[in-house]
Amino acid sequence: MADFNIGSVRTGSVRANGINFHYLEMGDGPLAICLHGFPDHAWSFRHLLPDLAAAGFRAVAPFMRGYAPTEASADGRYHSALMARDAVELIGALGADRAYLIGNDWGAGAVVGATALAPEKVIKLVTIASGRVDRELSLDFQYLQGTWHGFFFQRPDAEEAVAHNDYAFVEEWWRWASPEWDIPAEPLESIRSTFRKPGVVQAALGYYRARYDASQVDDQVRADQAVIQAGPVRVPTLALHGTRDRPRRLESFLSSGMYSYFSGGLEKVIIPGTGHFMHQERPEEVNPKILKFLAR
Image (cartoon, rainbow, N blue to C red; front, top):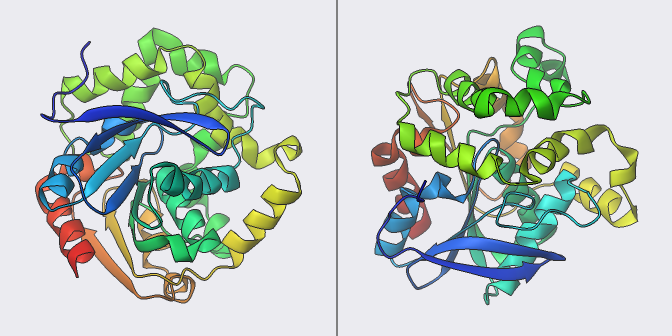
């Protein structure tokens, strides 16, 4: 099927951190990079890109590494520290010295990590459906229920399960993570079209498998991960979360530890009834909050 029509969207590609990234782009002005998560793609920001462009930003939404048409990692590595380094390198590759960073899910982890690694390159930071998980919460039964897929993806037959029945898994994951959203057919089909492309499922699962794969870690990854883990993030941050995301996710968002980690000033916003894809579910509520924060 054809991709969404959002008017004057442009497409382009750029090489950053050894990967050829493809992206969607709208507007001119200060750079705002929007990074998606799982199971998603750059069209996740189809509602936000036009609003950012209208507000005077150059809004760019890359397809994350391995999400076609962006290249898969040549060495098969998808460690979270590499995603953070991707985001850092994308700023310069897109011709800017500094940028606003916005991310959902894995994209949120990438932009937070990038800000920890290179705070001088980030003006402001926005996270969507992301929090900080302390040791106690990470051992909680209900929280672990909400992360079951990360463990399931370690199985050798996980690719087969995700692809079964034309990627019904992807649709069900969306409905599970955003249970109050009456999801239109078009975004679901668009996601399926991405996952049908060669190598995408392997890359998407590779993000999760990297957590338990020692071969993903070299000295640079180890050093970057230590910086990211320690923090703090010293730029102004807006964190958005819904009340209908997966089990115990809201608790990770409400954690007081977020304030010490995001030491540059943290504003938390909860939008009742929204789930993991809140920027797609309620753009009429989410986008004005993002734009107001970026403009301050």
